[in-house]
Length: 431
Image (cartoon, rainbow, N blue to C red; front, side, top):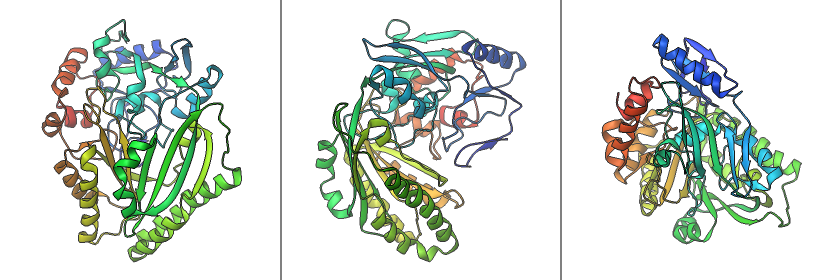
């Protein structure tokens, strides 16, 4: 039985394979086609949707991992598709390189992260898929399709964020940057002060985000400033990091979630306490060590991308909704930002975007909360994160992505028999 991290999806595949080479992936695809079985690749299982569910053949890519090649002059690296994001910094370090931007979780495989539109925050930076300058795909025929600036370049905006619908990614080439450090300032603030200066803070910072604790007037802000790799580092002490991330961020938050489920009336005071004890720190460290944080408390998540000018009204409507419904929401609401990009199915395609993410503890039913929030987000031009829970189908999504039909046409060409289909892709792309 395969289950995703959030325990929102599970499946018992008819067959599971663990390919170690590109050739093994090709053989698996051909064999699945002969048997008439659908085949899907799986990374770390960090998507909350059924995007990676594989009822036929499940390809577990954990062994298809590591560095393939480095172009030091152009600062480009090619890695195997199953490489986890948290492994990449060590692979890049000998070459003085880093990934330009990362999200706050780094457990995903690189193929899974780009295929679902994983992103970080920063008004001048796109999602991880925008760092992709080349890829190699195993198509439904078992052949290799190489995409880069010299081969099939017109396909890159589709393949770099392909939802797993176009084939099995086996190699990914990333445009990196010189290694850098981040100065991190994390602090609790009054929510109204944060909202009043939101546009200016987003524009001024390299990376800005905030979390709002429902039932409180407090937010935790995170501002990261990029510095040269040679800048002095002042990392968190091991003890301080353990207290903030493991003891408070994981241990006490687990207790808070469990208590809130048993006694919902305690959620508001727990949130007020959390807003006081979480995230009041300042440090400087290597970029990957600052971007990513540990997440051990299981949850489920929905996130919508909005035109950046709609973030404030949508957020205000969300606050009002929680008050009106009388819900007790223990997880903070997260707000982040990203630059416009050209990836056909990117949530930031063609527009500067802000992201509003809502969460529920994994043992709580998120349906009522998520669906009500979803209606607000749709009213403000929202596009759902492909790897996070939502209810939309192809009819609605087609209206929100200018290149949607182009993507479907490419899918028809590369996978006419729908070898890489599953129920989620049937819903969001059509059968």
